[in-house]
Length: 497
Image (cartoon, rainbow, N blue to C red; front, top):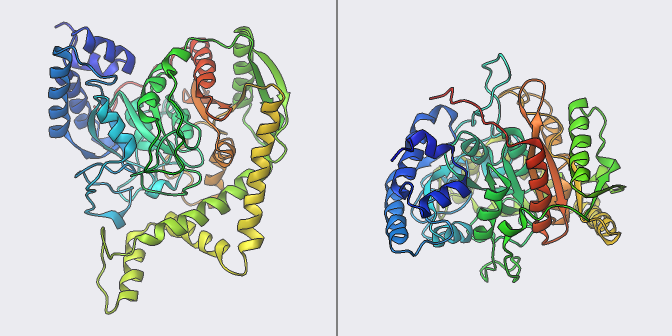
């Protein structure tokens, strides 16, 4: 066989799928190539748990299926799983000390769907603790280091968050694709920071069952991959009705891959004037304008639209999300599973376990959430934030009712920043990373981040497309136009190996 192990990790998921079916290489060979790459990339801290024995066993099954002509949609394709998805008998930490030693006796629906379709699990990927963060620096197991570096600098950069391990692993060629979750931008922001593609599907498109909860009305699973086509392939397997999750819709999953080459001729793309925020870097503004020009050249009509309640989205989000988090995280008390710190009585055990088990950012959000839900402040904060959420959703409905098919915005207000650069700053400065993404979660809409160029320091920048509910197909079609026009991002050399 002429293909080398390094070549196998450079393949897109679609090319690897085709190569396996054509028997150009085996599932065992491509799995071993990725396991070797993971072992070499430990300085990046992308994987919290490696599962080589399980990966090779799954690859053996895949090879038998391929030989028998029974290949499933993802047969033999090595993937990474964000460590927020429960995996049967494999430790699940959610990036927190409080889940130390937790081995679920069940499988999340999303990961179950991937194994049903023949995918191979390489391991569990690092993340901000309980998915609370925009830089992957809040993980109890250390920050993930981005495979990207600024020109003429060795300073370590963040990969974004909370799905930083997923984005870094895909960009560093440590898996063909990865699962991720998005509560306020946690798929799209790290994808933009690492030159990868990340889609947050419509709320309810993927089951949340077996996924550790942050904010239940906002959380949604989705893939991070290296191309738009790869995202379409993975989402088709991840999505689907699940009776175990009452918020998961009973709708057929479209053939997303078929929509990738559909183009945008005849579509109307909206440019929201409210997304021109104060202090936006000129290169982000230029990229946004360039993206609109690319779509226009491909046959789309570009119109300016208004989403007047955008300015309230971030403060409303940082009331709703912590409120739900404070409720969801009440279950971690040292009684049934995870960390337990002994004390003289049960109240003391609760207090000491939670004090030792939760990190600083998680404690901050629990306290904010508990405060806004308390008797004297519930109406002033939580109820008002929910009313604003309704108005944000109505803004989008009005725009779509007026014939707009999708909305184009920047994905992030800047390129990736250095590890430690914002840790001692006002927490609000970190929260501002989500300024372009939280509206999508508040309205329950689908959004995709696609690489669109590099900044002056040679770091990736992304554009975001926001779609109608359950119209991910239009997002894949428009994102492919941007990918074709911008050219696929050339990923960084392996300086860590």
